[in-house]
Length: 114
Length: 116
Image 1 (cartoon, helix red, strand yellow):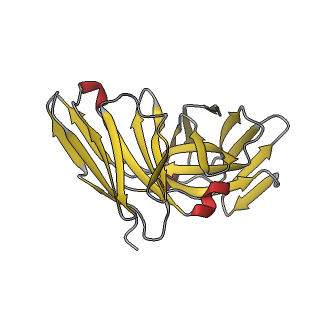
Image 2 (cartoon, rainbow over the protein chains, first blue to last red):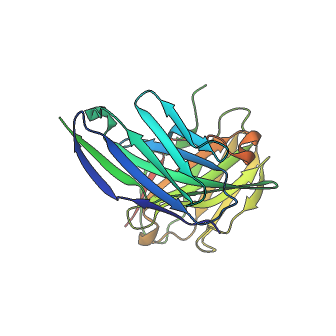
């Protein structure tokens, strides 16, 4: 099955700096790569996603890049703010008929220091 | 819409007791997922349903775990008997059928289970 690795496990940045989280996946058939943000005491929430036919996607201060050849994708947060502090999960989805096979990375705890 | 609803939010029980976690998915969503989250193992998919039918239960750790979805608006995850190593946060999530081709899963707030 799919295996998703995520790095780093913890990341601390100063407010205003950029943060980058990287993930790799094993199955070249995976074609959908979402990123979820989990705040304390809450469930994960989708913040951005990218499909395999696109190399980059941006939404305000967050962007994702995908390198299909190398099988890795990254989350970039610019101008970080204290409210960006949370755990971030990447995931990879492999499409199969009547199957919703999505595997999550282990998560990155991001701390933005004021 | 109120989003995915889970109950209880917190459950403390003693080893050997039966535990039942409940989930109400978002109306109209036809996929439902149960996840377990621990510090050691991260977010693990336990089982998921499509149109109330279990599709993949390969993530269910043991026979002590069972899940049902009697109708489109309700699902349960049961642990019998419970053990201390079952202590975790259990999430329910739902999504639309188009998500079979990649789409957003909507997570509930989770149930924090502590087995003493």
